[in-house]
Image 1 (cartoon, rainbow over the protein chains, first blue to last red):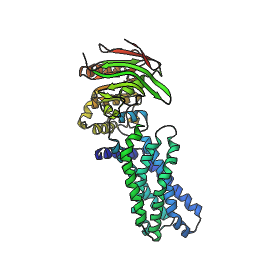
Image 2 (cartoon, one colour):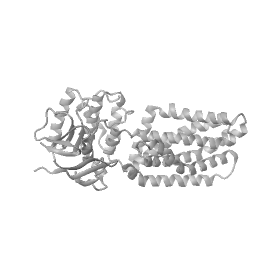
Image 3 (cartoon, rainbow over the protein chains, first blue to last red):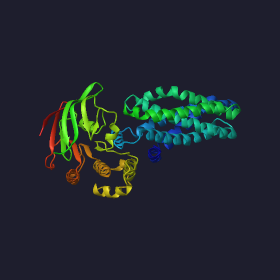
Image 4 (cartoon, chains in turn orange, blue):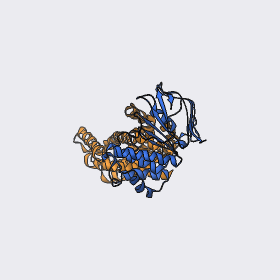
Length: 219
Length: 215
């Protein structure tokens, strides 16, 4: 399972590195969204800083949906899907590989957007750095939930619009926990309870994905 | 008498309420070649996909390479068949070698064989080229290299001659003779009359989701 996961993750990341969709489309979109949010809030720096965690995770939500759809599209072509199916890969390994690749992509994007919040939304550098571990954990959980819900939304005509609708209820607790942890890192407060929510969600989605991914892909 | 590799009895495949195969009965013996012919939309591709475990059986019974098509174990069957569809089995943003390396590692085949199968398929010298940059005929040759690397028991090729030049068609004819001589089984779909078929090849002509004639 681990061998398949590393093989699939390596393949997805190599394709992403080649196509540069993340670099030239997703990251600029996220930065523009942050910039627009900063402009909409007006010139008050204090207001920016307190709204930064919520705005950051709102942008992360958009970015995650784009990247889950992109991850699905890598294997969506009929010829690719059929021939990869004849490789008989362990579906649990495929799931973990896709989660790993998506998590790496989200971590890269998240790091750039965190830097963007310092510049655009005037969050303190020290507070933002101390929020980084909780952001990484939340993004990992979002990757697991995203890959699972990507499989749930299928690859048919309605998949692109079905994905946000199916994903939002699963993403909401993760986004809230992530936002609270980020706020606590910036302005003080208890962190561990929000970490616990993200950790439990990560474990739950990984477990569900390992068990169900093959069934969802078959159906 | 050769062992049966695939047998279907009144096989039915329904997708979206529409019958793609409506009662196909056939027997394919090991080491033989079958050519599935018929007009567009009669179910040629669906029949090959059913034999490869790529679509589920909706009714009837079927057994391919010893695997019951009605069981949940179609993944075990898929590892034993080689499928080449219209699109080619590739990731466009990976190079020829990277695609074959992915397949070799996934199947536990030695990556050292990649150079040899590329040369055999007449695509040597293109190893580092991204698949998206290849012509349709070259993509098909890479697909054949992918199958050579896999060495499946049952070769399923959907319109394999499409986009191939004369040299490519000759190579494919020669390859089919080799594959059959090695004991593997081949099933292909075709619109047109095939030129140089191995002795004993059966033609299954399909009409409306059924096999109308066998010759």
